[in-house]
Image (cartoon, rainbow, N blue to C red; front, side, top):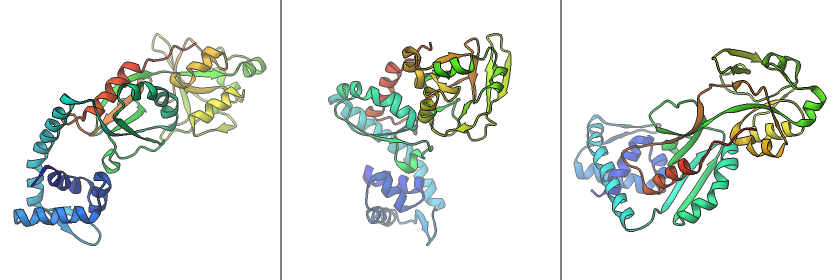
Length: 302
């Protein structure tokens, strides 16, 4: 069997169905079915049990796939390294990121990336849902979170800091809070976060922490719209540094409570790159990771 056939068998086991494997490999489901049938005929054993509702790997099939998986990865890596030695990185790179991060951080970097790597095609999936990289055939995910958990390989691209900000017009009308507890007197703009109670968490340089349950008449689920509402003078908002750097420089927003660190999740958060395998990394993925690490600089808050 050739490398493509072996990759197909692994994809079927990984994704749990012929249809899902076909989507990941960009093939027709009937071609996947024929490849599996041919492999089973060649080996003389049944690798998968099929039913109308599910597909499962047999015991013999699992043992076989466990043996070939590292070999397939080594072969793919060897092929990629051989190609990379004679040409620049190429092929399609699928990336997922949140809508706000993709629009505000990644898109402005694309001209420089395309100029440096013109043979890499980019398929960008901007969504606030956490897509399944394996099921969707995605090479790289950018997640804004504390240290991620799970089976994916992760590397932090940069740290993220958050700031309580408000428009000059709002500060002129309502005043500037001198202490985190003063936020009780303000109509704060809030963003719902799953599993969080809506509090803003503050910390001094000495490690003293204060949790403030903020309230306000407006809750917005999208950070871009939240920023627009803050710009419009509708209240203080808690926003990431990468989202408000230009607003602070241009004076559209002003940082409040500058003597405190602040977060709605955890103080050690950042933009993390997640990808499926450390062993096999296509040259196009390595090119993007190195590019992002070089070009992503934490903006200076004003």
